Image 1 (cartoon, helix red, strand yellow):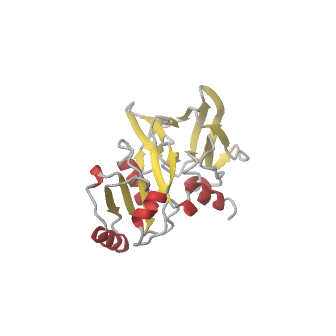
Image 2 (cartoon, one colour):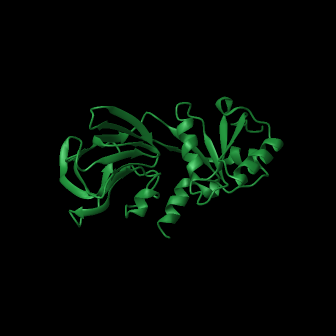
Image 3 (cartoon, helix red, strand yellow):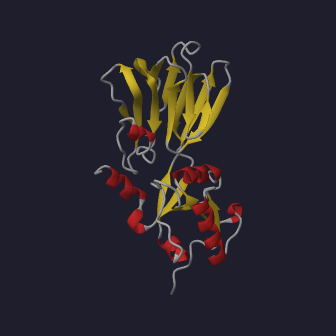
Length: 258
């Protein structure tokens, strides 16, 4: 008896680059497709930026995303091929990730909320360094961090901005978050911390009026924040599909060996 297909309704989305648009047009001629909101699976053609946009766009629906690289780095993407797409989708491995939820309050007292798949970070807005107080689960762990900023990264996002500022790479199934300073000045030797993924992190800006700081959740930015709280949203599942020899676990493992 043949195994039933997992995915019957495919949708294609593409980044605005010529390569991505051409790839989408080719695949739409070859395979039956529906509107993205009606699909069982969304095939995203572009780079990691498009993948993040797609995961945000379909976050509430929980639609699986299968990416094929028509961008540059394509860390989250599979290799692009026109042939055998249905077979690749049916054989694909599932990675489930959870986003960070960020709640920020600005210096005017306004509250803001956003989710991040890679990281939540805070960054100075002027030539002056940021001064930050960091608390974990209600306990102040660092009374004063003087730095360009600080970030909290998920395992899926640990190879992005977090890695570029010297943070650790986390295996995808690690129940951890990376708390990493951005160009720390004091304490000069502080390299960050690994926190359990149930931790609730609160960061307060010291002298927020004279040393303004922005808060960013992936691509959503809020200016002149006073406090930021972030934690892993365990209630929201984001589903990525990868070819068996190209799983996200395997790609993260390869990154640790250069």
